[in-house]
Structure formats: structure tokens, C-alpha cells
Length: 342
Image: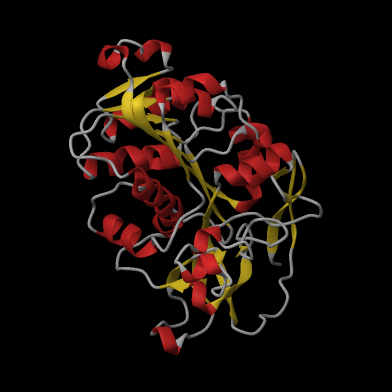
């Protein structure tokens, strides 16, 4: 029987029978091969919502999607059984922002896996045919699911515009932060300081290219003579994340904020940011970045496989949510396999 992981309310995740409706116009049925547990999914579990996207009725999360086709797609040259990626951002395509290419900012978006739109933590689901993306050879389900967070990291780097040889600080070594570390080195950044309170994440950051790691800003206070970094990229879940990014920045520096703070609010003293004259940009999902993400992974230039710390069947999804919420000491990225671990 088809199943799905439902979030009923904050702290309440259950695997239950699930019968998707028949595919609507322009949709096709897929079997979910793998789905990543994202930080935003975790906020739905911990806080019951993010901003206006609240869990008001049981819904299925999951937007980092790898799926198998259940039928041919001749227009895309794809056959039944093909492994594909699915872009979860179903933008309207007609608003001012979409016409400018800012599909991630579309105010009319239907985002797969954000309430009230069911996502991919299910054995089967319906997806718009236009959101299906063919893959290069050699992609696994987990690697495919990791393309979405890599796209977010790519979008963050586009906003950051790192300069050749420039020092940078990355706050938060979760999956996207670790991808940012790799992209910064690939883009030609100089020294990269990665900050995270968890030792296993710091160790992984060092292995993936960080030139120095620290548990917190106090531990790194002497770095660069205490003057801070010209570029700071933040991907934490801390209410203090914005303030810590300010404290890590050099006068006249640039901040790129991608983390979603617990409780959907920041704690920010205004004076330090104002007196440093900092430029600030916020990351909202990603643009049309799947092609670049695929190319980087296919060429072996970005390592997404090392970020997957746990590969679990759907039945263990509720426990996985609890481990992430508790900040378990061995967790980086969990990938769920709704049709069996592979």
C-alpha cells in the first residue's frame, strides 16, 4: 500500500497510508526514489511552519526529489523507469518577477513540499511534467536528491560574487554550508573559515576545503587580525545567525544570509551592522540552477555524496526528524528512500 510521512503539527510526524489523487492536467505519476530531509522540513517539524507557510492540516513534506518515471515521456526523450530530478518550484511564469527570471521570488509559487502542497516523502506522487529534469549518466537517487540543496548553494554564491583570492567566512556547516565551502574554493576564494559548533561537521568542512575551522566566533577572534572577512555566508538555524554574520564581517563587507532562524525571527543589535556599512542579501531558494548543479556533480568538481550521513527507509523518517531536531552528534544529511533503501 502506498505510504507517506505526514506532519500533523509541530513535533508530530507519522508514516501513514497515502493514496495520491489521479494526475491532473500536465502532471504525471512518479515513484519517489529518494528525498532529502531539508532544514526547512525540520522547521515545519520543530515550529509548525515558516512564516505564512503553516502546517494547518496534515501534509507531506519533502522537496529534494529523485524519482522514477512510471510511464514514458516522449517529449523529453525519457522512458518508463528513468531516474529523474524534479524541480519543486512551480512558479506562475507570468508575473513581473517570473518575467525577470526570478522564479524563486514568484509570489504565486506552488512549492512542492511546502504547506499546503504535498511533497516527496511518499512512495508515489504527482508532479508537473515541466518540472522533470533528465540526468547525466551515473547519478544515484541520493546524488539526485542533493541537486536541490546544491542549487541553493549556487544561488547563494551568485549573490555573494566572491572575488578571486578573497577571504570568506561560512557560518553553519550543515549540508548547504558545506556545499558553499566547496563552491567558494572552486570560485577562487582565498582562505575560507568554517564555523559550526559540532565537531563532526567542522571535520567534514576541513576535508571539503575549509582552510580553518572553529566552533564559534570567539575561537576565531584572532583570525585576520580580528578585522573580519570581506564576505560572510550564513546558513545556520540560529536566531543569532544574522548578528554573528555581522560580527564576522569586515568593515564595508558583504553578508549573504541563507539560514532560516528558529522561530522565524532574528536577534540583531542594529548598531554594529550600520556602523560597518555592510551590504546584505538574502537567499530565497534558487534560480534555474539545476543544469549547473548537475554539471558540477557529473564532473566530480563538487562532492555531494560525503554529505549524506544517513540513508533510511521511510518508516524511520519520524525518528530522523527527531534526531535532527535534537542536534544529534552524527547527523549531517538524511536521505529517505520511500521505496526501499538503495
